[in-house]
Image (cartoon, rainbow, N blue to C red; front, side, top):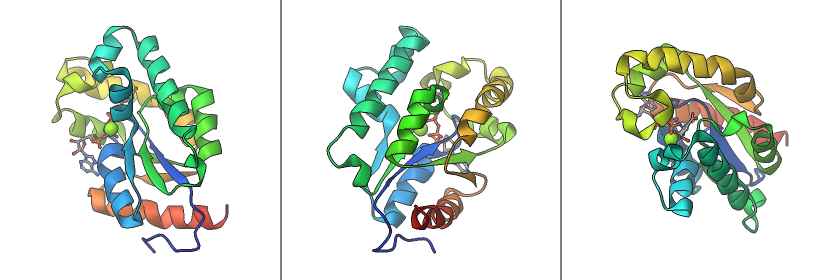
Length: 188
Ligand SMILES: Nc1ncnc2c1ncn2[C@@H]1O[C@H](COP(=O)(O)OP(=O)(O)OP(=O)(O)O)[C@@H](O)[C@H]1O
Ligand SMILES: O=C(O)C1=C[C@@H](O)[C@@H](O)[C@H](O)C1
Ligand SMILES: [Mg+2]
């Protein structure tokens, strides 16, 4: 079962997980299979605040966290949002703030894309590091940094409606996610 049934409740899906987990890659595939729009919250933040993520981080991480919290609150406050079928890629660190976790779970269904640190690092070193300021600029240090962040965040990520193994080709992850989600939606 990988498509939405007509009688499934309409709920937003929030994808969470570490940098490199595939939220921005798998999200549009899921949205396509589900017949739903896709929203990347990181891109929303950039549009709302008129600056790229590294520039927002350059004003301090707490400034960026304030912007991402505001972007989430504005999205969720859009009329009818809670009753929409929409796929949202959350920023990797959005779950760290308990109020953000609570808001996502109240407004929709939250799934954690779980990928081991070694695989995250493998994916991240082949993408430009400048776009992910928390990783720094030293490729050799990415694996350790990712492992440390995941250790600190794991319990927050696990406070989700479901956890999906994010290993393997993005199409496979998307189908895995939709199979799990179908069950979540029917027991709402
Ligand atoms: N399932 C996958 N298998 C292999 N590579 C992948 C997979 N998913 C994503 N990637 C690759 O990993 C990199 C990061 O993926 P993506 O941008 O989707 O991560 P993200 O979870 O959105 O991270 P961020 O929180 O930093 O936005 C990209 O180069 C992407 O092509
Ligand atoms: O894991 C994180 O803290 C981040 C992940 C990205 O999605 C961006 O939101 C930003 O680079 C911070
Ligand atoms: Mg992303």
